[in-house]
Length: 435
Image 1 (cartoon, rainbow, N blue to C red):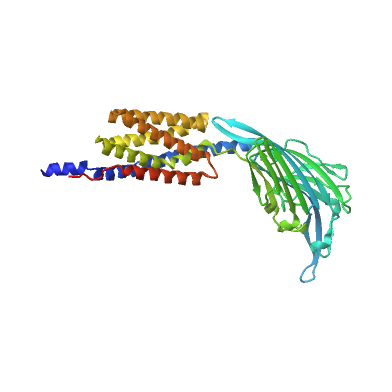
Image 2 (cartoon, rainbow, N blue to C red):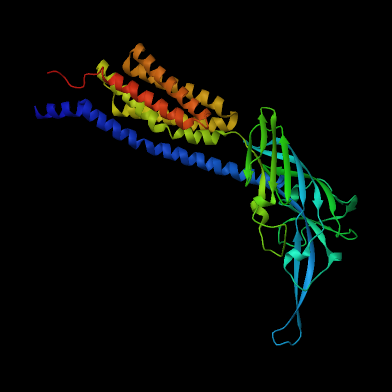
């Protein structure tokens, strides 16, 4: 009699629910392992991207030109014994700068990975006013105007694809690689002023053709800076410290315009040596690849507990309504089938893309679970309800994954509706026997 009571207790639905709930929590461990696998594949993808960027050209930042004038100050030593010379460089920013950038993007593949690179055509023109050394607060400084030079900052020199020339007041100036000083830029080109008369307004122009990847930016160094960028890439992200005052994004590409003045920055038009950092005045555009399959797979696996819990709840309802008995081991097999979906999604997505991989994986797992439910329950109608449940869940998840700005809203509303349906279904269940 005691053995029969223990058996009845173990077969009770309350105990079954406790066991199944613990099983659902335990089966979350494989979902964490799948997330680790996805992270590893994402890390490998990033490594491949960096290798390709290193060969093609990295993110490009163009700045300048800036006029630089060396100076010397002679100072008496404290004991009035001899003279000490102090050297420095005065930097003068342009009065106006107008930059026009045209990005021609291209998708490059290496093995199963893809990256976006571009060829950027950048045209920079503007003016310098006569340098006013009285604003520098360097008394007794002797300026070497004959040694003056212009510098243009270019973040990745490997990407330069033309032989640029700086044209100043109609005179072509020779361009030399590297920067003569690193007060403003770590890399770039230098142009010696030579015979240019610097004590008059200067009109300059330079054309650059650059290979780069993902991002093209410029530094707004003019007293007034006007920047225009355009491309046939339909998924831009505007970066840096300033947003465009005007932009137009269509499926055929984008056009964006910036207007920045010296009042929008935290540095003046002239200073000496490495006193200010101009990088805070950067603005530009990043060419985004829409949410790739790794990111979507990572987002989808976070819903594993929802899929397992809903399937377990439905199978418990089926047990109670049909008086069929389903062993916890069979629950485990259903859960493992649900987890296999994410492994299939990640591996197939690497080969053919996310959407087709999602369809193939969802159909495969739905077919497997539906077949297994039919063999257990021997009831076509019940197996059909299980199939509809899987289809509904996978459609719900796919919809959320396609949404970026409204994913949280759609997911919250969907979970609320699912909970309401489960509550309504639970009202049809007799949870206690009448005997």
